[in-house]
Length: 296
Image (cartoon, rainbow, N blue to C red):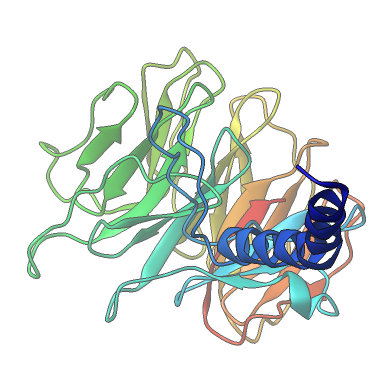
């Protein structure tokens, strides 16, 4: 090859080389941006969460859930932290639980379970005239139990420990997991039945209003909450106070235990009352009807 030919080739490289590389790089970058370029890892991708987790700041310690599936942090100013779960049309959320991986499970009146920043393990859809579902309890080892108003309990990812389906006139209002791997079923008249637990479950005689929720103490025992704001401790749980003497604008709908040994009471219009925990009385961000309060 002559000297002139070599010089001509070098000149062409200096002119066309950088632009060609730039175009190739742009194409690859665009492919990656639009999802065209993928990497084969040999494994199926993990299922994505239905909705992102709720953003909770250090000063916030609870989350409110409404009937439409909105989850709101305790701070009313933190509107950006609220998320809306994908609830099927016509379904109504009736209960919620914290999953072992710090996500949330929501259960609807007809037994559908929606995972928020976690996976749903199963559901039990019932016919329209069947007894409605009233609550969900998460096991510390994974999985959850669903409870119906007629006393049936369905297990997903965990063992079924028994239920009250053969008991006449049982009106179950809530279910709570026990620290030793079982659960309690609470009825509207204050009766509590334990399954696969060594903790005793004495009955509440003649509550001033019907019972709406049960929460397990982090140490031992449990609390029952009535619609008028009274809280009844049992089996070693300590009383922290209640709002039974206040005139509430809306009835209490749920009670949840806090990590420091106290509990929260939530009303249907979004007010939360804290006992044995440093939170102040607050108001929900979610505009819908509140059905559950959960630890953040």
